[in-house]
Length: 126
Image (cartoon, rainbow, N blue to C red; front, side):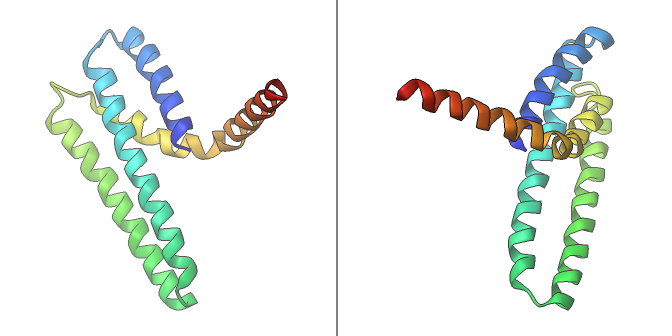
């Protein structure tokens, strides 16, 4: 999913900068949002490993608490982007944060593409 976030960030930075004519602030906002998205993904992965080991009731409470924490972090990131809007675009930050959601949908396609590359690489080595 990190690869999907990075690929989306590259495309969104280029297209968004051209469309908005903000050649520095929009890509900076997207990269800020994508960095936050990568951090949130890391938190999700950690949460899942902890939840698997807990009993069902504690796992439910822990999962809810972590979910609320992630939402609060997303809100904080948007507030920071608005506060520093002369340096980073809040819209770019919002789109950068959304790459986490889109990467979940793209994960299967990216996984298949990498498997295909690995198979081709394996054939060439033989």
